Length: 279
Length: 306
Image (cartoon, rainbow over all chains, first blue to last red; front, side, top):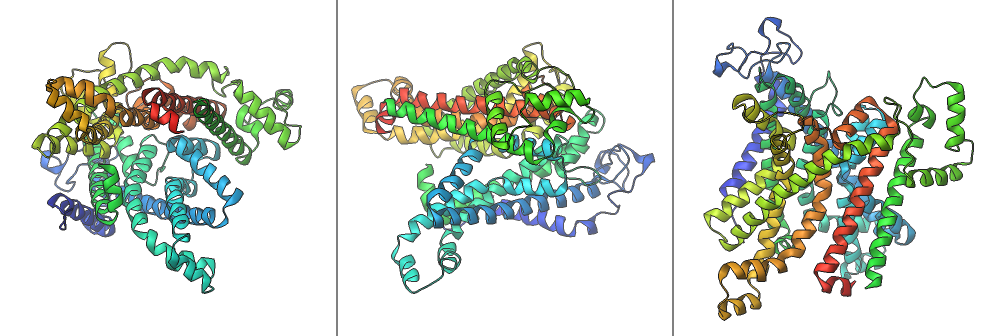
């Protein structure tokens, strides 16, 4: 077991910090508004390939600056994924606690729903809901939150069940603590490590889900934009303007790759049990 | 033994029931089912006939039972766009998806399993690390981006492979690689850890001591014992593969079920979406049942233990 993180892990963390800075301060870097069109400079290649100097990464089909588009897409993709991850983690953990607290038919029913969701690829559930309820930003964020909640629910339930029989939990109950107090103050800190690991593993998957749906034209809708949507938009211009699709793709890849490397490292560090089970 | 089959079978039925219940709830909470399944411009007598056919004048519980019965017998209604039975439209598309899925699995197995074995045999070496790095790349690379990159290089720059459609063996190459990469990565990772575990077993040393050649030891002594986790992963990955097919078929304009689903969702052809979800879910659940039963056959310990 290594005590110091490897070069690759540090690199992954640095990349993520850089991405985060660009997302937060991105509007400072871009000289153009996301929506400003320059119809004389449509589908111009990046500056380093002979395009106009003022568009370092090129322009899209209506002459919008790719840098500005990418920053806007990045902000949307990251915030949707972040919201989804948080909703899923909180909701799932809560359901897990409820299942473990009430036991009986409540637990049975909740766990049946958990099993149901785990038995289908989530994109299928997402597409069904999008088709029937119609696409809206609210529904889309809720969908991202529904992704992966079942993993948290299983995790939280398992931990509560095993913790409830521990002496410390019984002591807290015997001292007259409210069940809520037991869960929030005493059990939650014990699940925290496992939950954080799960968050780092779910986050890249939600990014992939959001970008896939937006790529298919079924996620984030114009005038809003996301990395997946830009990529999908650029598909029709692959032969003339490959940069429209390639930049957002590279960005998505870099984010998911760094996040999974970091997530794996975190898991090995925080949760040695998982590591021994894995290999 | 019988109990093992019975539990698996009951679990399958339960999941299918949940899927049908899910589509029923979605259909009912999203608005008027008549408008949803028949479209907004239906004639009054059409609506009346539809109401009777689907029992919409009955109490909700009766409607539910009727719905389950209809879905179970494959009566998904007609497509809003094509005005043809949904079930016919779906089954026209099944062969394309099935052949693509098989090609992807084949590709994943041919690359993933040998790579995993190699990594396990050369544990800690450069080859091991390189293979595992590729596996991580395979997980993180979004399939739609991989597809786009391949179209860019092989169809537009080198002009050696067709960018879309079906027809020849060449059309299979890029979609199958795009779809199979994730599974290949997963397989490599799990084959490696399964092999590492098996290679340390006493019977491997016994075989070596007996003078069995290395290649025979690996193929006939180690691999069968590592088969369970590998089969499990192939089974578990079916969901991934189906999710992948939805995207990959759209990227390569592959005329399969996945692309049909995407078009149906974007046109809000709800009868078709409902039918597709039920058919895809049923296929997956049944495939999982088959995988479960396969380990029962592969490993007597599992079916006796259950």
